[in-house]
Length: 119
Image (cartoon, rainbow, N blue to C red; front, side, top):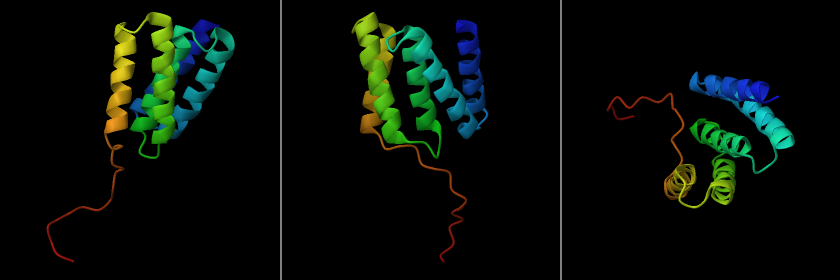
């Protein structure tokens, strides 16, 4: 049911916020697949889950930026069809997509510390 799907989705968001990206991705993918089956591809909750998975992939240092951009584009297109071009959710998704396409992906954390010494 929708409450179970929402709980699974929320758990993936919590895991991502804690930096547990592998677990978050597994949960987010399962939640998205279930929402696609139960609600359909163009349901608002499915589109939001798609966008949230894109954000998770983009935030994950080991994430897949190309996949994140594809998911964001898919969500933006779906939101435009469902809610209209000028709806705030559509606008936010489009702006995020433009930002990601124009900006380099976030740098992965590194153990190297520049202490100013020559080596």
